[in-house]
Length: 139
Image 1 (cartoon, rainbow, N blue to C red):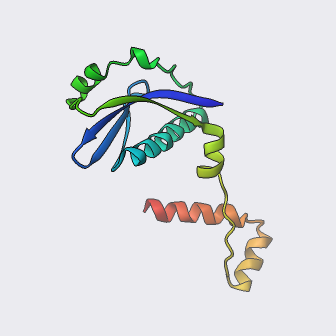
Image 2: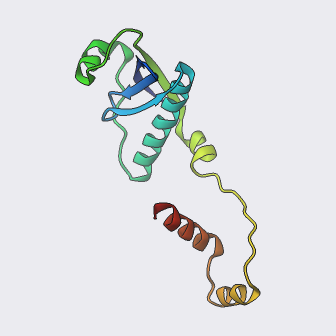
Image 3: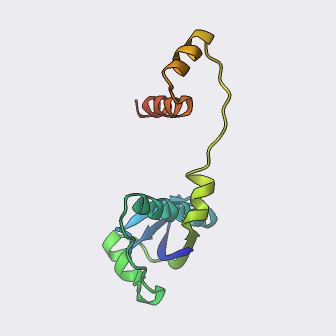
């Protein structure tokens, strides 16, 4: 199912800033208009995916005609020169399959004694590796 929200694109010296006024001013950016749009799709998908995982309801999207670029620019202290509004759409479920939930098979080598000890304790190797990698990443 497609989710569609209006996004405000503001041209800046180093690219574009993108703001979703309906989604708590969710924002992203890109160096080019194309990159900014791709980042907007990714940002929208990630936000809506997280809301769903947390059991929260996404707010209703405004109609593009109801979004005031001048009002938003004033609130953000941004220029409206070369700014525009575009509807950004994404099928969150499909996007998540490719970007958020896709598993990758890895082959690893451990000492035989460690393998035997872990199997005896019925340790889930994939889960243990994921937990260890997450701990390393956050450190």
